[in-house]
Length: 213
Ligand SMILES: C[S@@+](CC[C@H](N)C(=O)[O-])C[C@H]1O[C@@H](n2cnc3c(N)ncnc32)[C@H](O)[C@@H]1O
Image (cartoon, rainbow, N blue to C red; front, side, top):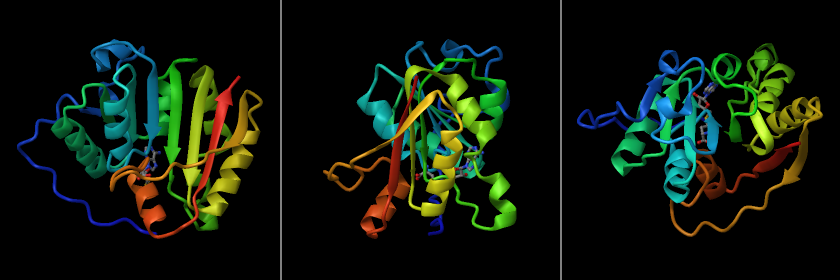
């Protein structure tokens, strides 16, 4: 299922507190330079329109949430949503997640990693672009704290199977555990926009959860 046209970002909204560039991330990593306080940090890879960051940031003020989004258009859109809603503990960084993981996050620095509906890259010659390969799985495992969670959901069975196979290569990641979704209580009561679209159109969703030993 393709993506719909994105609404315009209101030019009156100040994005400076919520939108970061990959180059502006502190090296060495210092969470307090990005957020106002150092808290358990959860990272969403490919944050799209930012529904997850807004909902979780609002519901869990004792945690920090960082979305990483490679498309500037979507990173700006998500940041504007956070700024408008005044979510103080969530940010979006415009960057390639692979680079942020390999260059910025230290070992055992993340409480959870969320990957929802990653781009499937259908064509065989594009499979190497898929996010979940053995090398990146090693980065996920390295950066999670012991007892930290990895969440991986998709509507594409092939993406799911390939992701699960890649995740199996890391002995420190225990899973997959199945995730049972709850009934949506209102129109935006979904983990992400893609989850909302898939559920409303009746598509099957494959959900998995791992814990870092
Ligand atoms: C299919 S969309 C899903 C968006 C959102 N997770 C959701 O479920 O609604 C995948 C998103 O991942 C982003 N993305 C793809 N590769 C990425 C990468 N290497 N680093 C960061 N974001 C990436 C895309 O730009 C896109 O916004």
